[in-house]
Structure formats: C-alpha cells, structure tokens
Length: 116
Length: 113
Image 1: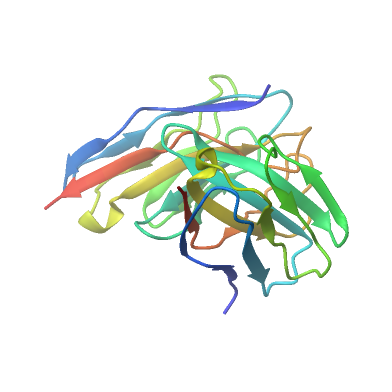
Image 2 (image 1 turned 180 degrees about the horizontal axis):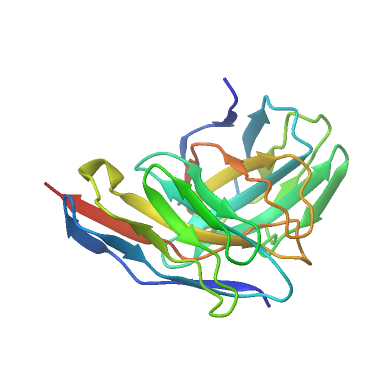
C-alpha cells in the first residue's frame, strides 16, 4: 500500500530536549515536504526537498532542521524545542513538482507535538 | 504573494443538503488548484484538482470549476452525507515557487442526520 509514515504520532516533551520526527514514503517520490498546521493558519511549509541531498527552506523554517540522505526518508529535527513549536506536523511526498503542475501530495497521518 | 482565501467555518448542514464552500485565490500566471479533505485524526487526502481555466474537477460527488475570471474554485456537492463531515482545504501550486502548495485556512463541515 502506498503510504507516508510518520513517527511518533503523539509526543509530549519539555523545552530544550532535542527530538526527531521521522517520515518515510514507499512511493519512490523525489519530493518531500514538512508542514505545520495551526488553528486559523492552515498548513504552512517548514522545509522541502526536491531530491536526495537537496533541501530548502519553506515559509517557517526557524527552529527546525531536516536531512535527506535517502530518497525514502525525510526526518524533521527540533534541536532545542520551544513552546511555540507546539503544533500538528505533516509530512508529504509527491513526484517531482513542475510549475503549475497537478502532482498531488500524499500526506502522512500527522504528529501532534506538545512542548511544555 | 500567492494566497488562498476560504470561507470561515464551521459550515453546519443537515444530511442531503446542498453544499458550497467558497475558495478564491491570488496568483500570477496559471496555477493548478486542489481541494484536500482531512477526516478526524488523519492526514490530508486529495479530493479533486484542476489545472487550467474552465476545467472541472470531480470526485465522490464533489465538484469544483476553475474560474480564472473570478479567481475562484468553489467546492460543491448536491447532497451531503454525515460521512462528509471533515475539514476541507483549498490549495494552489503556483507557476513560480512551485515547490510548495499554498493552502487556505480550511473550512470545517459538520453534517447532522
């Protein structure tokens, strides 16, 4: 079954304790992306990757890091989490996007992070 | 910059009622337009899409028409079901900055029996 898998689904942690949210896709997609979802703000892009070893900032990258060492994996790293990073996070993947292209993104089920 | 504006929710309807969720966009050129649906506790799923003016996307009884003259992509369904209760997101992929989808804020739909 084609899917994007995120782990963990839920996490409560404390300020400053490094954490990693993993994301893996089995569709051989070149493109992967991380979003955060906050009430009234919709989904905002954190980072994206067009291919292995190619990553770039989205709209809200501060406080986050990513890596893309393998095509299937795209972990999100919070080196020193803070309460304003409490949010619902989604990983997504797609075939290589093109200008105005219709490639849909496939989303994971989300990771709910609470930073105390 | 590129943006998507959706109607505020929640939208509350009775089963079998007609649904319209408004979506307008701001973008240069010819973006692709999408509707995604998010059921409770799940990620977003593609509902339908349209890539050029006057295209109509449709799926599961939902429809939306790409209107370039009014920069709109309103979602409609003739007869909603309780199982349609979810959050609906309108989104676009721009011509430039195409590496991301630009999402609206989402509209929650609640359908009662």
